[in-house]
Length: 164
Image 1: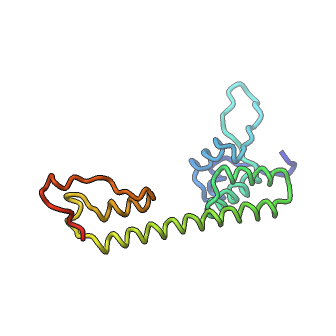
Image 2 (image 1 turned 60 degrees about the vertical axis):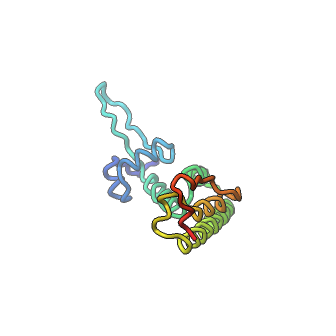
Image 3 (image 1 turned 45 degrees about the vertical axis):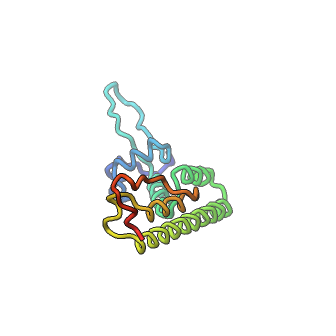
């Protein structure tokens, strides 16, 4: 422990950061934060863990990077760089650029899904799902890029497909 540094129990840490005790314990289990155990002074020592002040900034960093879409694995990597006191701006820039590209891919995928669903809704009636829906099958085939929708046996009901 650094001289002059204060320690706190999990309840105080939770109050100072606004992060629940369960989440703090989870981050600890995932080795994103590391508490310090007080030295054993007696045979019947408690199992309380103390958290140094530095854990407050680590928790706030974790929450901030999570809010930006970083995974726990990516956050763990960034925390290691922080703890080594390495200049992280280039590493941060590279990570941020990778994350932006990933977000752009997800947005494109969601826009494609939105288009497929909008087209299906425009072509389909409410009773469509009772006997099988060619429009829905076509949308699934486009999404999976297989080009061939699932096979339906419309002879069972004696009706054709209800979608236009």
